[in-house]
Length: 472
Image 1 (tube, rainbow, N blue to C red):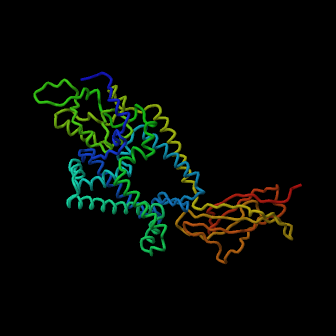
Image 2 (image 1 turned 180 degrees about the horizontal axis):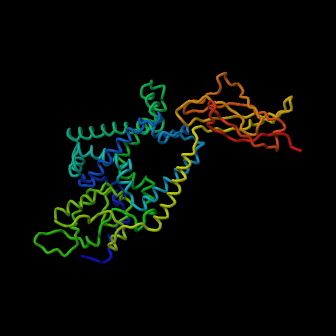
Image 3 (image 1 turned 45 degrees about the vertical axis):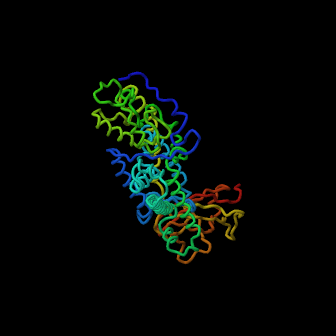
């Protein structure tokens, strides 16, 4: 067995497997994988697919589990409504999420890409399996594509692409539901076409994009378009867990021959790991290849061969470069521990912000272009605009009161006899006067606190300034 440093073929670093010497696309025909890890991936994928398609219809206290309504700048996450006023909370959440992805990648490599990413799940567990079902495994697919057009080829290709379009339409509707909500999606589907031209156009556009991705673009999403895939070379280091070939044990490679004493390594050069790879790489050319998504199909393929030839499993396995080189076990590095600490701090800060977050938020501004007014009684009056946002699915009757300074009175202009009403998941706007006695003014820009009440319960408060005459 070789103990010399492993030197892969340098040519693989100059080209990618999906482009030939003339720069043309090389269509991949990955062999259908099988094995323990592939079975685990299937069940995880089916669970995530069920959650994805059910997600827009799930409710927490009458609100969607997840809705990202970018046009209306309204976001619902786990039944909590977030508006632009909650930008700071969303910023902290985004920072924590990005750091989690960064830390997760440093520790576990691209496990997300191979096991959780929607692109991989749809491609490998939905569209590719339909292809295997209709056209057969890799050799049958190659033969079908090379064959002249006949009835058998026509119906197989037509059936496959019709099913692809139907599934793409379902995916488009699901993703649209996450943006606009299921209620709006139902309206688009059931109302006359002329009533929702924009919504239907979006649906058709999304369907076309998903069909193009899964029918033609395929693995190039991971190798060309995905920013996360392009960043892995920066995020990973020699201590990151990746799908790695144990060259210490496998080299030098040689075919297995009967009745011959084997002096080579455990790799019998069967190329099964290459044939099952959905991005067409040879994992034996080294860890951290750009195209590798850590899908583990090569691990299953290699383990199946090792079992057939009575050799130990895990010639290809999850390990870091340093683990392979030193024969050591995985351990957390100082960088991993430091990033874990920062992530913990961000998570605690996010939890504190969420628990202290009020269900109602108000913004009060002095009406532009308006100076203070003096009343006949000598009091000072200012005009304000108020916007109150409801972050729950419950409507509120509300009233406004001056909390500070004492002695202030508040009059809402044009308020109905029943008072102001704050709709569920909505906002209400109004204009009001605040009047303060001259004795309550201690500075030109007097701090002013306004309370928003529902009945006798204070549900929110906000601060602004009260403009008065220059104090002498």
